[in-house]
Length: 560
Ligand SMILES: NC(=O)C1=CN([C@@H]2O[C@H](COP(=O)(O)OP(=O)(O)OC[C@H]3O[C@@H](n4cnc5c(N)ncnc54)[C@H](O)[C@@H]3O)[C@@H](O)[C@H]2O)C=CC1
Ligand SMILES: C[N+](C)(C)CCCC(=O)O
Image (cartoon, rainbow, N blue to C red):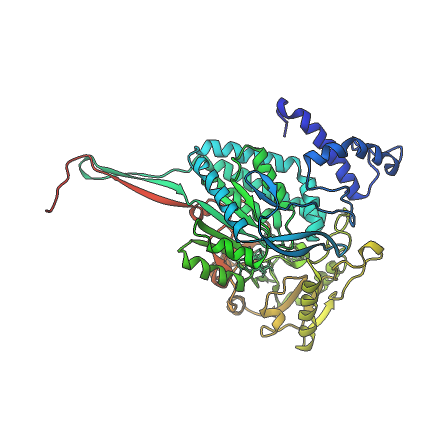
């Protein structure tokens, strides 16, 4: 998008940085103007850095020297309150934050205590006073500007996401695109939020006002750190709320970019705050009496605890929890699309996706052909350095999680499943990656519905293939789970497609595709996968409340 003249100066510097930044991340030899470097990138780069670094220290305080794999380190402080980065005033417990690609510690996280949480909430409360009185159009402008800034810094934010989460840079860029689209979408809705006018007898009338809730808390998971923060803050802010966000302690970094961008886009200081920490910090947030709403993304057991805490304060909650979603492949599908769909449904973000279609039901007639093709394509997935352009699968979030996924595969074998490909740890040749958390994507055959790998959410790159014979049978088996986040069907028969998705007990269903994320569509679960919706118009309901005003135009007829 074209920059306004007022922004040109700082923008050209940022662009120069971005080009250098992307070149470093790629490890490629490009010069500052993005052209192939005739003088050799290695020699050219120090000159560019000598020019840029003093300025960057001011502009980009959270970025240290270099961002190529194995070189990034994050500077303190990591909390964001009242429009700036701050050290927590209390807390004290520290956690290591990793770069999954190399297993290096990139920073220490200071977990925020009760006082710091209170200061963040008070900061949000103060910003709410002004923000909640702005018009929808004023909010629209701030959100649009924030969306524009995210879009402008897409590569920089995606690189941070890749370094801290381990997903491929290709995927991280898509995540950032979905993030700014989400802000644009709610910017568009902000100006049209309105109540109703209702005529009553005798000229009296009523009307409704759609009002914000107050200070909303967002608690995020580690698989889509920046995107989750946008999915929560965009509708919250559009409705006139303020937010305190707590990312997962595994991925505390990229959300600071969002906080800085909101401030730069003109949001009042304190409108969007970040407190870092784990379980205890989350509990302080949920119990805080000035918090009006909690929106949570994470596991089912934590979701239960969040709801219990919210119940004590009668706070509304949105819960985006786990899943074990079915993907149903009928024999009349386009095989090529179905295979692509199954890969999309299982292997994005190293399989660490809540709505993944990990139970792949395949009509027996095409079981062998489908399985052969899926295995062939899975074996071709390039695992490795997530900042390399040709990598398609990076590293899992941390060592304990990698080991947990490995245990699921071991147990699947013990229960009779057959490993058709992958499943082993992967050690890249590059020595700097040898302590990274990599594994080969895995396809399991010979699966039965009662196996642990088919019942439990693995949250790793493991697909289970299950044969079926009839539509009725597969719908029943697909629904036979405590979860209900998503589901998919591949068929060329349109009646069958709609009949099957209508029968699926899941909040997000796909026909002839899987795991795409148009921000216009509501997203959320049935059953143990949670309730409330993110994205789409529906999310407005979860970040606002209706006030009814009844207006008497005549005299009061008293019964007394
Ligand atoms: N439905 C959805 O949209 C998504 C669901 N998930 C689910 O999340 C899980 C993986 O994410 P994790 O971060 O490991 O989940 P988790 O439930 O352990 O943690 C999620 C967040 O809650 C915080 N937290 C943990 N205990 C808390 C407590 N007692 N009170 C307040 N906050 C607390 C954590 O610090 C983190 O920020 C998977 O099971 C996955 O299915 C993940 C992404 C998206
Ligand atoms: C973006 N998408 C659809 C692949 C996943 C979003 C839900 C999650 O946070 O896991």
